[in-house]
Amino acid sequence: MYLSSCLLVLFLAYFLNIITISVGYHRALAHDAIHLHPSLRRIVVWLGPLITGLDPKAWVVMHRMHHAYSDTEKDPHSPKNAGFLGIMTEQLRSYKAVAIGLIKKDSEVTQFAKNLDYDLHILTRKNLWYLPYVLHALLAVIPGVLGGFWLLGLCYFLGMMSHPIQGGLVNAFGHAVGSRNFNTEDDSRNNWLVAFFVLGEGLQNNHHKFPQSAKFSYHQWEPDPGFTVCLILESIGLLTIERKGLIPAPPPFNLEVRPALPNHTAPSM
Ligand SMILES: [Zn+2]
Ligand SMILES: [Zn+2]
Image (cartoon, rainbow, N blue to C red; front, side, top):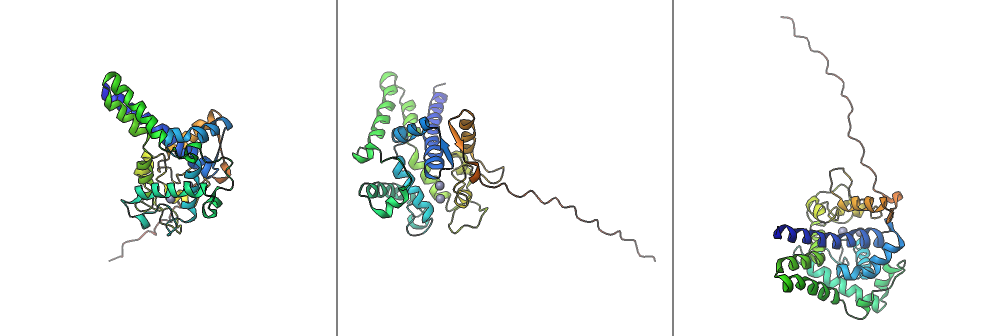
């Protein structure tokens, strides 16, 4: 019972984190593939850093740079430059560089923020980026101190602050290991396993071909739980999917009936 409670807390914390990044930061703020209800948008912009540990403006700008320079020398996180194992530190280093670039109004960086109508979060501007990590660490310690439920607290913390792992999996596997539906100029791949665990984000090849699509899956069997979340949130009025930009459906299978082979008659002896 205790172990299942820990796993449930891990799942819920992880889900809250990844849903904020994949649906809020990525599909809505970075690509305008969905339009959040104004109240939900305010929550994502103002509370997003507390939930995820990531500034929505810095994250969006870094992500747009990734699309603009995908797998070239200027890509902020490509396994081609950083190596498969170095991607996790590379993405954190790039994120910090982008935040500093935005603060210093470096045009190389600000050009990707032109249509963003919100500023860097106060935690980033005041160099208090670490506060969400401290906050979640304190919340995680409470069940341990009060009742000895240390594993529960650890699961909570790991789920809430899981973004370096999610991002590392997507950015490494999604640009190195997997299939390709489309010939793009980058090395993007569709990695189904990462897509399953990271709300469809592993379908990088589909996403790089159709970045304005809220739906990342192309074939029916490609897992995109993030788009299912979008459909559910749309059904209760919390967002609207931009249907014009949706990835097109694949052509139907060719069921053409081949002409019957001519009957062969046995040669007469
Ligand atoms: Zn990518
Ligand atoms: Zn994107």
